[in-house]
Length: 122
Image (cartoon, rainbow, N blue to C red; front, side, top):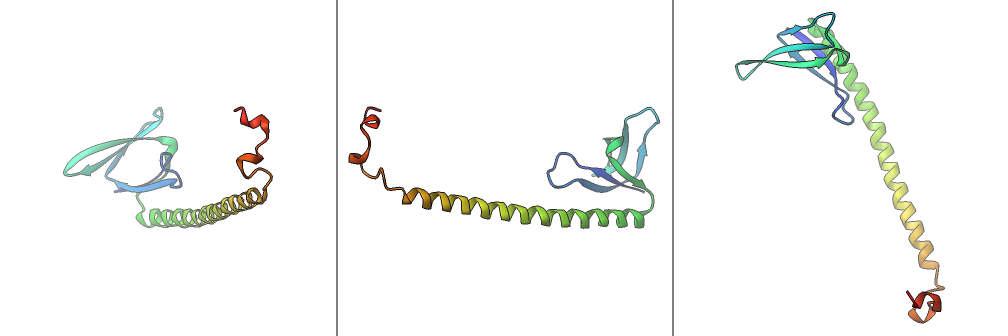
């Protein structure tokens, strides 16, 4: 059994996946690695760009060590993103509140009779 960690480009805030395969096929001239695995009793193959393969090993213990290290880093970074998002949301709420207060204070044009003649033509 081989253990693989692969870069994940299509899912925001998830940069890798890990999986086990029975066999892999590659060559020096190929830009891809073909991973072979069993799914529902059938052999399937998945092509992966060589540059997206971060780790390919037979050592399950090493795979789990690196995988968990990546997971911890991902969790720390996700926490920072969540905190930044919360701060951004608070800033947006504050912005809206301040702008609404400022606009509510402005009483120069309140009623229709207060609208300057230039605006009545539109």
